[in-house]
Length: 352
Ligand SMILES: [Zn+2]
Ligand SMILES: [Zn+2]
Image (tube, rainbow, N blue to C red; front, side, top):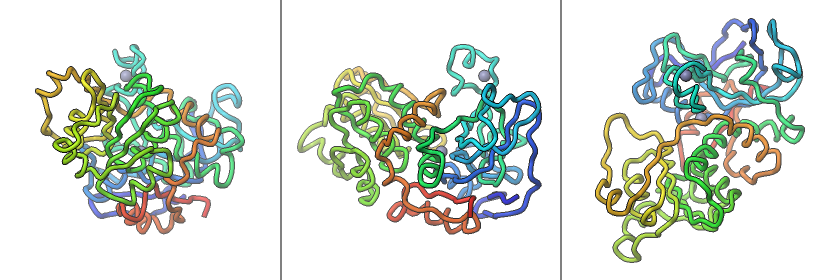
């Protein structure tokens, strides 16, 4: 089978690997589409994400859709996993299930969790940009008919990043009637904006430095977009936006400051974007005097089911899906996905 692998910075290959068979409790999924994520791009460009360096060949990808190919021993169709032939997406996380975080119902913060296409552990967890992906049965999520074929199956590849966005909203609290700022208009920021509107936010302001990305945010539900640099300058002229909630989805350190500056006193800031390794500047005194709640949001737990339901119901996020490339052209797809003036979410097509 084909797989998209990296071994070091700048090294991206489409190579032949042995096709895996599902073992006990596992399911084999024939992958149809895979979305290229910022973390995949980091592995490709830098040979790692944060402190996780690629130390052996790593199959990338964790945002996938496909159909069930085979069930392993002990997996009963319709009970433990969808039947062979059913369209599915995959929850990428395998938490340990034992630790304090898992027992507290926060498996997304499990320190021993394994995540598809990740170099956090050795051996690495091989990812989903491959013809056949084998995962534990409980990570396979059946798709409703609207997402089962063609363009629906492409939309289903957004379930994972949309789940990330929904988790950030859960961390923020009730958004009904609220004013929300989202810093960063990449795929995640755009999906946060779409989900916030769906959750009843009265106003969703999205900021970014790239005009094309702001256009995507407008197309999926932002009520207003701002250049990130203009937002900083507006503090002195127009004063703060005084939004109820600010969600930082860019991972750019100055944007965290923007969020704290523009949230109302007593408001909530959710840091969703992964910041550069180490410490970043932080407006501590504003946080104190304005009693700002700063919260982290990392991956998700059960929100992938909500994401699938929203996508099936027609959440208008198609503007995020900017290009689809046959897997053989993975390198071109990765290069394009890194150009924010031309691309938002780029899909690899493994049916081609
Ligand atoms: Zn992702
Ligand atoms: Zn755990």
